[in-house]
Length: 288
Image 1: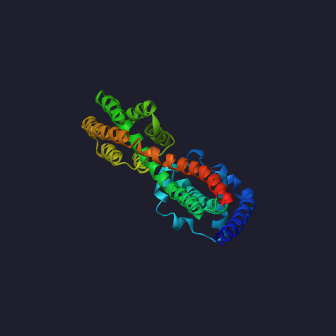
Image 2: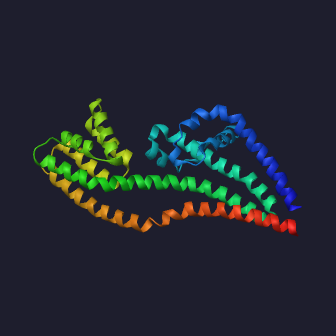
């Protein structure tokens, strides 16, 4: 009886999933093409979630309110709402994809627990989508903090030998690598395009959202407003603080390296387990 229920649920959920995919693929494929391949799994199926959102008029702005600051930092404010929509679509799509897969695998193996395991995997992928966004923001912060001491030391040296701060920023930005270099060069570009320096540096701090950078920008803006002969010393002090932070990050990354391998290993293990158990359970049922 349970197998009949699972099979019926599998047929219905597979039909609904297929109809949603076919009905919405053409409509949303342009949006899907803009999704970052590195940050999501199986992005083509997200049209299913987008179809559900549209059908039930789900308010993604309200639902994804907690994630919006993360998306704004990762993809800029301009694309934050779009990526909130993508994340919610991904979560819906993952859960809906594993419902029929779980049902059919449960029926094929004769073991309802396999259906439950696959449904749990769908829920896990949905939760992991949020976790990955937080991990990406954390990696972004770590990248900037790792590069910041060298940048500040160079900037302090240039200022101490008489270089204007604007020129010191530009030279340091050109030599800086990673996320910090990109954000600094973006700030230089904004200033070159006419944005006031004070506003550009404040925007830089807003994009980076790191306490050490906020402190740096506060010193810079104070220097712009009041002038200061102590700017080089202040930059050196912040650089010293960030060297300590860099050491802590290196230590933490070393400790977390093995932990980050657990999630992909769990997904692979679950897949292998299903592939092994299904034929075994099928043979056992046939023999009985």
